[in-house]
Length: 214
Image (cartoon, rainbow, N blue to C red):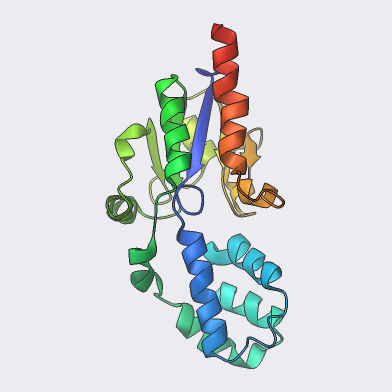
């Protein structure tokens, strides 16, 4: 399974807390626009952000304002969302526990790749900020260079199976049709101290390797 399977990890939300920081900023906007009373279900708002944050300020503003029954404030909400990442970068952090497991996978001879919806230049800039060593990955895949993972596999004439670890529903459309897509954050409910992704990788890959070599 090791040589015939590529494990692809998403940069935003899986390895770096960008989505978490983005969600906090959204709540700041909700508070600044005096929409807190309408936001009675925190978990549903957070889930909307997780599922839709990559779609851009216009779509995300519409989705959240419709949920809050505040369509009249949608243009202002969109303006607040625009370009907020420049103010968020200082809060970005690498998930060290997840990255350590990925390093173990690399050392165990798994093929690993990093995917980002960002441009290659933007990814490199943020990788420096969070001190993510991109050299630890066999492949660096960015949206400007790799429009789809299925197209990338065909172009590179790679016949390996692919398992993609993402965090939005749109990620299910990104991966090849016959691949496996894991959305760790959607399986996290009920786990307080344990990380679903770390446990999944250790139990399904690292322990399997150790057992086969025993």
